Structures are given as C-alpha cells and as structure tokens.
Length: 91
Image (tube, rainbow, N blue to C red; front, top):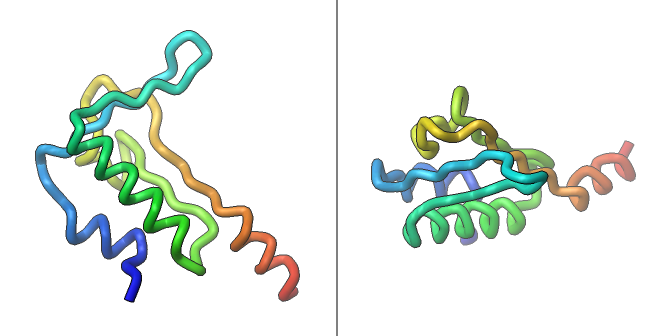
C-alpha cells in the first residue's frame, strides 16, 4: 500500500532534515543537505501519489517548522490540480 504524505512525514522525521527556503533574485531558493533534499523529493512524490487532499503545506513558522532553518523566509505549498478538478466534477 502506498504511503500518503502524512505517513511519510511521520516515518521519516529526523532532526537532521533542515531546509532553507527563501526568495532570491526573483527565484525560490531551496537549500539543504542531500538527505534533506531527498526527503523533500519523497514528500512531493508521496503527495502526488495520493488521491485525496488537494493541498499540503509546511512553513517555517507553523506546521512543519522543524524542517526549516532559521534563515527560511518562505514555506512550501503543494496543490494538486487533478484532485481539485475531480472535486469540481463531482459537485
């Protein structure tokens, strides 16, 4: 059975996972160790593979703050348009 994004986060917690997310020269800058970037890729893959929850976010000053460095000024917001379209069609 595929794990959803919440199960992946729960299973993969490590105090060593730290991301810096900020805006720099009109780009979104994501910095982290190899382990941290692989963790983010796992989160995105799990989120894209689930068939519920059209959005997911973690922020440096809210849910998921343990995964950010103090230098982070931005969070990460994922929105699955496939799920949103399915919900609109079923109305």
